[in-house]
Amino acid sequence: MANLLSRLIDPWYPATAIGLEKGVASVVQLERVKGSVCKLRRAATFNIAESLVRPSFEDTNIESPPQLAAVLNDLAASAGLLKQKRWSLSLPEATARTLVLTMESQSQSASELQDVLRWKIERGFGVPLEELSVSKERLQKDPQGRDRYLVIAVKKSILAEYEAVLQTLGWRAGLILPRHLGEAQWLVRNSGAGDSLLLSGSSHGFTGVIFRDKHQLIMRTVECEEDEFEDEFYRLLLFYRDRSEAEAGQGPGIVRLMVVGEGITKERAGEIVNETTGGDLRPLQAEDLGLQLPNHEFSFDSIAAPAGLATLSW
Image (cartoon, rainbow, N blue to C red; front, side, top):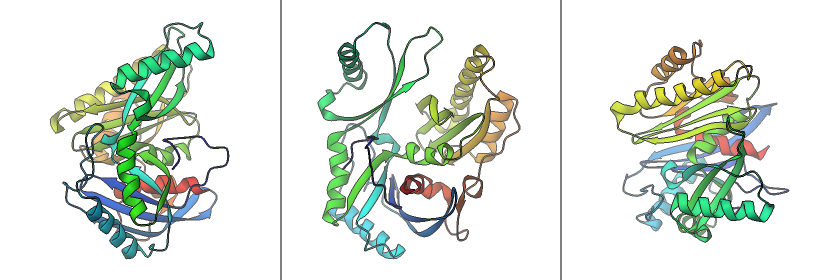
């Protein structure tokens, strides 16, 4: 399996993907239509017992691997995908943790930089680096000109749980990413002038990501109660607005908004964005993002993450 977000010289990414979240499992297969437009060729979504997959960064995630394997086998059969052996996998959001690391010194050598990053990563996650599958992405410098890095980590033992389930079915996962990174592919592939905002909500909070030129500008994962959701979302947008005002001339602001998941309606999220930024946006739908759904049977929210990973096949 490729390490989390590993950048291979010649990767293979299948057009089939699995999505797992607490209470829900899904499989999808996409077909390219023309240009950046694709359609849902096959798909199935099952509600599963919430105890079957218990997303966690620290603790065991899968209560009964044989039972989850049986669910995935039934899902693939329902979608007509039993013959597929290569998959991408969207993990529950809570399996991953994220840090933004700021480098106080600008004079490190390459080896010194790696040592400092290692120390900061281990301190930030509270886990030895050897136990983590880590992705690092360099961000724009902060207002003081210091280098910043976005670091996303999943424990190798947690990845091994999910891989073992797939292996019992004779399947192989070439790419495994947290949910929001699968969903974000829809904005990255449809990027253009202006910034893009992904709001990925759940019953325990949200992940908000703002992209500029296909790169993550701001990312924040917030754990909160349902009645705190709107206030926390406002705080994220105010932080973005203040930063944008401090960087005058950096573009037209947020021009694309994607809202998926629980915690807030798309309409209310759009209202908050427009109130805070002075825009006139509406949340993007599947067709706006280049995905043709066969009918109203499938909710875009339930398949956005695995379908986003499937777009990486072309």
